[in-house]
Length: 320
Image (cartoon, rainbow, N blue to C red; front, top):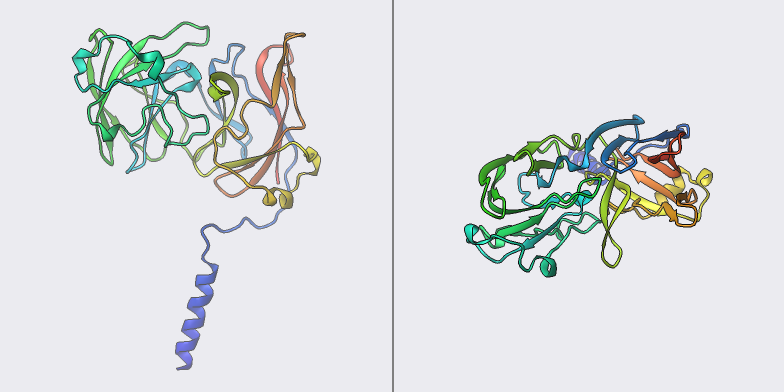
């Protein structure tokens, strides 16, 4: 009987210690680090950054891809490259050959919500209407040239891959290909230009934030330039009241963090039309919690490099 109670007490003790995640023990904060990334004066680059290592871990032209396919075994969502101002429209037709133009596109087009909620993508739950034809507006490159339209059918998905069929609206360049899944990444990316999958994002465990253009909801979708967080086990909060130097580990733990991709967003700067330049708001602070449970504070101090060229966000951050 004595042994029984010892075992029972041990089980109860271990169970009480099993949390959804273990807190990171208190530690000495790191140094305040200043760094910058170059997304180009036309904002043509998407740049992925790892806070713990203080390094750029990936960089690609924003025109390198069009669609991102969710990679988890049960995943089926498809996202648009909003940095190119992409839209999609459900045609309601399953007759691939009959869709030949953009009739009705403007009144029915949709875009992905900027917070990254996969329940609010332009393409949506395509499985509810198998083989429906979608028209895709590929958006614009970094100098404003339109990239044209495509039609596409999402034929099937399982735990390892997708099957899609796509073509130009006039039916030329019709292809059917398989999109493989790799759960080491958030998405498998596809380009209509190469008609194949392309390497874009680094592995999902390798980065925390990405500097890019994206569509923000400002009453209407509007292209902005900013910073998004990784959707994989990363969260963030804003604070415009507390001085950057006063933000501590204990303070960070009191904040309510969100996994909204655009928590950092674009409005740490503002365009001054009188001076034709950007003004930075260093009082806008951001707290980022990474996949390992570490907290960082971050704010921006410039948008120009030493030669006065825009598209070079400069920021300070510190591991708390």
